[in-house]
Image 1: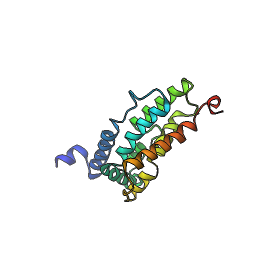
Image 2: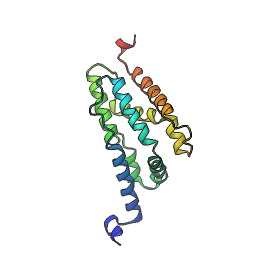
Image 3: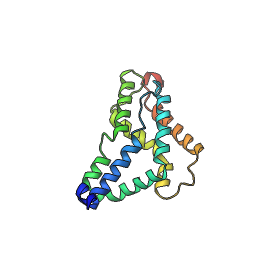
Image 4: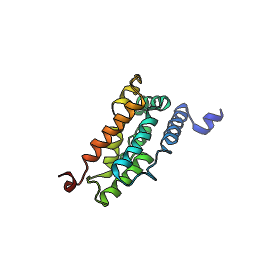
Length: 163
């Protein structure tokens, strides 16, 4: 009865659990204090992020989110917001600063932050969500993060640095 008084319904409780887990996972993943060099800074953030999203409890959260999103528009909209959560917004600000400094070139740092996180999750996360985490090793995580950061950063270099 106390749970229903606080959350209203089972769905309300479920939504609160999903939001709490998302916030607790993403809170420690900030960009404060990362290297000013975009490649080094994004490597540091990417490593922490991929390690977190491959944690079995986070993989389970991701599955639940994907299963419930079509039935809960408010939850889906929060999960799929263009600005993303706190981490994506922090990465957006970091990228925007690198664009202002002339270290990167991109039309939309908000979109770029979402693309960066998608690259970092990549095949290891897809396999884990599908139930196969056998390939998740420290070496595989490092390879995936380095590859994603290299692709992202070198694809965003100012034209003068790329030539």
